[in-house]
Length: 414
Image (cartoon, rainbow, N blue to C red):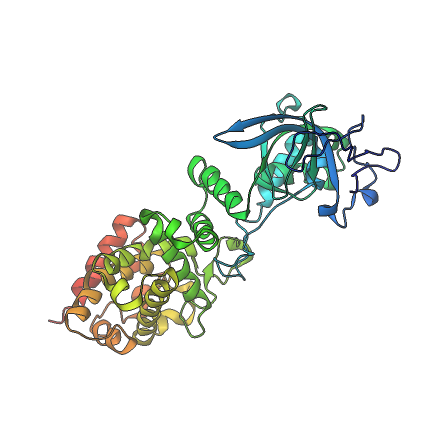
């Protein structure tokens, strides 16, 4: 096995004494594996084949084996990776990541904090890393062998702040700084995903679309029957939004800002996936409560999400047909922004779905056009113009409800 060392420091591994660890190996060697200061030598072309041996304190929590270690800043950035969410892949793709790209402003703020020595030079909060390969711990020497592809579960921005200080600002003290790290051996990718969801979806505030995408990936890994009934809607709406964004000819095709995207980098994206997910949740609830998803689509997440997405795409195609001017330049209109999203989905759930259902008609573009076409507000593109003091003035959840009430009234011809 290859050691992670400088040219003049070698760590000898693999003594066959019976150390306690997953692989029943022990580790020998008196020196910690140090990283070189030379940038060219620092480049890791095949990190997963590298190893790092460190002193460690083992402990357990709820049956999980963890280790407390200290790494230098350089060791941390060279021996850790982040599994980023990739919107080009489906939410349930087995290779889908689960973290958003780091924010540059937070990275530079942390890096500047380190370079300037702010806070008395302290950087005490521990990071949480996950090892997808079995860890080898020698009970006698109290040393832990780590592979250098540790997954950052909690601490992405702190790690990238160190990278900024070390690589961009060439700040040697940051490279040598000792950083507390907790290492968790994860049995599989699903456990790692779940731990990230628990930390960042419960203890911290993370975007709804990302948390829902993680749940979707967990369901794909562990099976749909492992999903709590209260969480089913999160997976369905995540899949629905993905279908709306990917379907050719959908009014939402490539228009939604996904969990790995930032608005300033994607100015043509008209709405956040989070907003759409939240606005269509009541539609899912209505379809579920009346047994329509089960009876008409089936019980699987794929069946139900495909069916629901089909209804929504037909609905928005009808809207585009009755008021094409509001879709001509999307950024000039609020019909596909939160006022339109929430209000139009409210009238779909409260009025159009029940009325069409009771009339035993199809939820298709033609039928939706018939009902929507009578509204003088919905069919007036100026009503949706962001510069007009009409739909654009409704800027809160209470406002969206008021707008929906207004549009509901306009659907009744005199």
